[in-house]
Structure formats: structure tokens, C-alpha cells
Picture (spheres, rainbow, N blue to C red):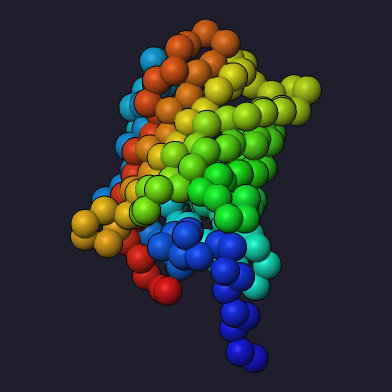
Length: 165
């Protein structure tokens, strides 16, 4: 079967498409956590709709045990650079982030965050993400967050190399 034609609405995000693997391992830190490293596989695809599909799957670098997981959709408002990022996470958080794509950089900030009733505290109150394609053709992601006990602080930084288009 022939792959679907990309919807022109998502063309400004086409630089994100593909399968990406962390290279080197990502780095995580936060005032309430011990610094840590992680591996991550990212799948960003389309099925011809005006939306991208994504999944982020993190693993412990030594044991390869699953860690953080999230999946969702990236939508563009037609004829603008306005972007919505909708994500469901295995931690029980569901979020909508909104922002803008400018060239090969996407900056988004949480618009709404919901969580399961028994989510672990402290609760995440705000998230920002920045994706960018660097000069080496690698995808970088930086995530910052604020919780009920901590102000906005960088939490994650990772660089991915593309393994499939």
C-alpha cells in the first residue's frame, strides 16, 4: 500500500517526521529529583490528516526498563504558524500545549493540564517544550516545568538522531 500524501496543513512541521533515537542519552534534572539519564525512541508520523501523530517512549539506559511514555497529536491552525500539542502520559497527566512553529523550531506552553485523581504529588502546573532541528540534522527537545512546590525549571534535555524518514 502506498503511503498517504501529507496534508499541506502540516507541511511546516514535516522536519519532525520520522523515527528518532536519543543520541546521546537524555538528561533529566529537577530540584526534587536526583539527576538521571534516559534513552528515548520517538515516532512522529502522519496518515494524510491535517495532524501529526506522535509517541515518546523512554527507557532506563542500563536496564532498558520502560520509563516515561506519552502519545498524542500535533495540530496546526490552517494558514498560520499556531500549533496545538495534545498529549496523554503514563503518569496520568493529559495536557494541551499551544505555541508556534517558526522555521525548524517549535515552542509550546501548557494551555491546560488534567490529571488522574490519585496522581503523585507535587502536581505539575505548567510545562513548556522546545523542539528544534539543529545544524547537524538532529532533533533536540527541552522540557521545563513548574509544580505546586517548584517554579519553572528545566527538567529534560535530549538530542535525537533520525533513523527512518
